[in-house]
Length: 515
Ligand SMILES: Nc1ncnc2c1ncn2[C@@H]1O[C@H](COP(=O)(O)OP(=O)(O)OP(=O)(O)O)[C@@H](O)[C@H]1O
Ligand SMILES: [Mg+2]
Image 1 (cartoon, rainbow, N blue to C red):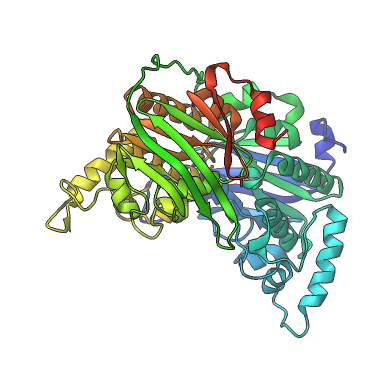
Image 2 (cartoon, rainbow, N blue to C red):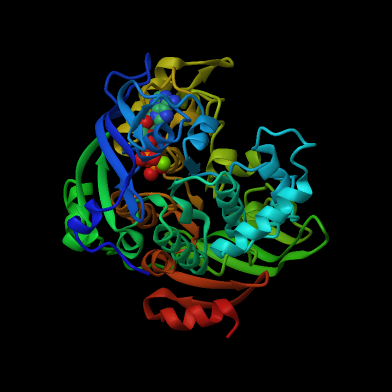
């Protein structure tokens, strides 16, 4: 593994793709440019990272470089020639492939079928069996372990990601762009992916890696370009910079994270689960007799390796999934098997893991999504007619307070917001009225550092003001920093509950894995 050490060394490598003065505006919805004269290039043999906060324009730039979007200005030069990419296929034909932030494979089909779907050839000239053989070869060549005959829906997040990469590699690109590829991966899978990316760079690919995580930048890049609100803040060889400088380039100021909290007073139980059982679609036990109490003014964190029943417990509490046995009590009232909306009306807010699917209705405007919880009641509607003015005012307050970057409350569909901005919107909406109970699933997933620290502060404020909060997070540091008590889940059961101020990270880690 050879990282490129000096600029001189870099300059000896061939430029595969160069973007000059790329601008992007979305007409009608926004005055200011989403990308403002960006210069960016990638050379054979390097991993060039694009670093920036939520909404910086990373995904839009990547989409332009790979032919998914057209630019409003500027040019793209591939192998020394200016090109106008008309489509992603066109991008691939010019040797540029992109792996998207969200998995874009057709889930009911096998990996090989998905790859075949992405080629122009007819089924006859390109039978799936041949594709299967080629994928097997590719996966050996790049150390990407994927079974071509497996259905995409049966693969883990990491497996789906590898399948996406293979689908692009099948077209033998020179430049590979990966948009936040680690966001769905376990740390081990991320580690493996970094090895693959380094190996590909060594093989002469130009790799563009998108992230807002500093440790990943340091681990995998040869070079970094920092984007902020659509502008380039600078470009550095990794050997000539450090985390501190890059953080400063990315943010305006440094934000310390400190988590002071009010002394915990013994208060009423706000939410309780008694011996809750949940069964999966194939009769498999997903939650096996869980009992928990969460008090007002308490954050109870659930730690666990993902897939041990955390998501199912949350779905059971929020009414999205049936409870087979046991009971759920909200503010002293039994609500087992009550529909989600009724549970919500009892004062339960939900910040879901699947934000785009469950957290918002993507094709509705931002304004309507801002009142998803309460549009049926005044002041947001009167006699079943929405009061646009009241909703606008409310939305503007959330947007301001939570720094949501959103072009227009009524004209923009919610789908155009970046992942991080959707999450900010949900955090704002769900916490706005200081709900008595908050169920938060991976609340800072996909957020940049500044937004993470704002969110942590928000949770502490909500707690201090008396909300009972159930927090599920794959980030153990987050669970340790925010929680008053930590429940560890393994195989659908709570295997232990510890006080967070005396908890030991290693000990929790061992409980999580059953060691
Ligand atoms: N089709 C569109 N129409 C209007 N605005 C858009 C469109 N697509 C993206 N935007 C806006 O462009 C800005 C940059 O978005 P982009 O998705 O590139 O951010 P990002 O840097 O990838 O952020 P994240 O880390 O949250 O994924 C955002 O404010 C987003 O709302
Ligand atoms: Mg993005």
